[in-house]
Image (tube, rainbow, N blue to C red):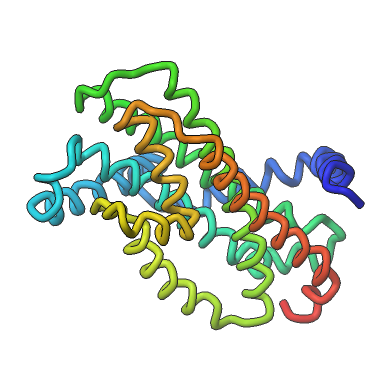
Length: 261
């Protein structure tokens, strides 16, 4: 089965179970903001508070040598926070919904997709605030900003792939949660969120997909340039690779999930 046929089949299944999918998205939102005073306001306030802390801590060390340091920080924090929220939510998508798919025959990827839709909506809300920061940081808007849709699209696919991999592994190995927490901390420091990468080490950082997407944002917003064709292909490569591995794991272990949840 080629990729186009597979995608068509999954879209048909998604349409068939549209009502369930919409209810899962609504449920995820209600659970996330249950018993909170600000509700969805935390989607915006939380990354802003993180940005404030990072700015206070790192401005003295790095802010003096990096132009528009607040926007520079925001680019990194925006994409990395979306990646973490999406993949952490995706990790528990199977186990958290075992009571449903063990009794009703529904596509298991629906639970992962619903988590990602919730994370994506939060991401878009914060992205609006990001553009406000860009405006007040005296950075000129240009038609090039529409190119930001490309890394966002790649990151969505990449997050889905990582989420499928983590959720599948988490069913079989509960230790994955703790290992991923350690890995995520390492990944954050290797994503150059608050510092600039020396040119001689750039090639090594490009092995980190999250950094690749962050750098794309900074190239458009801060440098006013469009990345090369090769860079676009690299963004797509990471997205397709992780999504392909995730799809393979879901198809290969689909029946075994029922025996481990």
